[in-house]
Length: 286
Length: 256
Image (cartoon, rainbow over all chains, first blue to last red; front, side, top):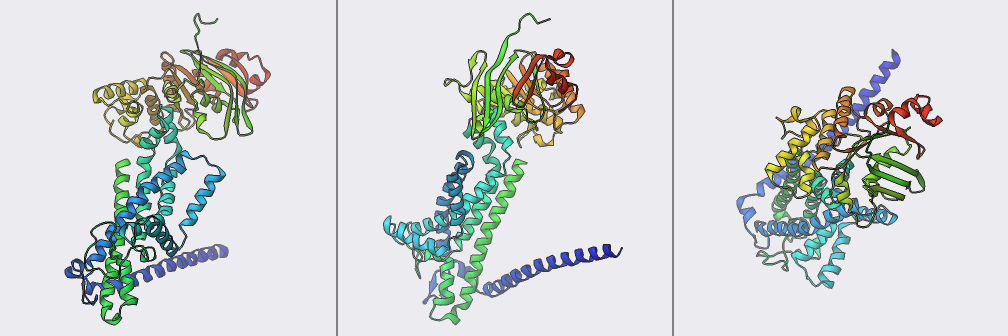
């Protein structure tokens, strides 16, 4: 009897400890969102969202930065999504599982952990200098694309692994070619997971500063980029400037908070998109 | 006793199979007659599943495997360079151990193999879907819910769906790899009845670990052990007067 009480007590204690962990994490997150939401909310207005900065960025809005981030994320997606999914399909479905493919897979996992500033410098060398794209949306987008690729590949491969091999075998046994089996009986069930992982990776890329710092982001541009070879303003870089590099930091603090709020909303919006895509496709397939 | 016209449909000659260094089949010589049911029995790991999977070359998919010897279907070596493995698998259907319906509607499951071959005409698809479901004795149960997801069917229905799916592409041979091992006894009886029906039009090979099932459904039985074909004969012979001591021990339940 005594032993049972003790066991129960330990169990209650354990659950409580776990619950406290969760509440602590939640509290930090909520506090963070409240701080940025309340302070940034005051700065965000229609004008803030649709106008360019004025008077040495002490007034006006962040429209060029919003557009810049949108465009560069688009370039990132155009590079990372097809390449990443293609590589994942090859690795998981076609490549033989040899020591070499294991090494490749390990390298990809490790690339996901490389600091973003390293990608930035690599982008300068490869895209800006060697390939002569200059500091531009294209260079920055491709650099972010490189950074996102390991995430896209890994997430896509995991998604492919969740499709039971009996779907592949069943299709082959009915006279499907390997590609037919993959296209009609594997990809439809893997794509929701692939997209979710990919969009999460893209959202992370959209919030990065270091990789675009040297490859295309501009300190201040009063106009929008006209082509892929133009420089651009970006939300994370703008935020960095407003909070550490500006000559009148105290004065522009509300604008910095506003920028932070917009950036968070942007990233959150992308993550929500991923959730919705997955939900829709899951329902269609079930 | 022997039937007047026995046509050899499948024949393996000195068939050996290796998973890496491990040998799973040892020089198996097996004959399966057209429009008859051949059962392959034997203890777990004896190579019976490996054997049946070589007939539609499903083992090709597994890396690190090697095959020696020949398999003939209608006298044609199925590993000959001019044989298209995709076409071979269309001719040799397979029903797996666990029912593996695809997460599509019942209709789309049956139509899957037809669409692979480019059939798009809705009317023709409907005709073949109905005929295949009737052929698998499932039509009456599902005719009003063809647009339901195949996962909504019971396990036994799912397995008959997989049989119908195999029938739809008009194979000549149907391979059953322990088709009832994940199914309750009543559903099993239905599938056994179905196998009886199927042999009128198809050549059937069935792997089973259930000896009563082999005795009930098959005309010929092959007994395997440790990758070797120990004995092959008419089913009643195998179960009443086997020539080999090992076979006798197995069918009388002394081991296995």
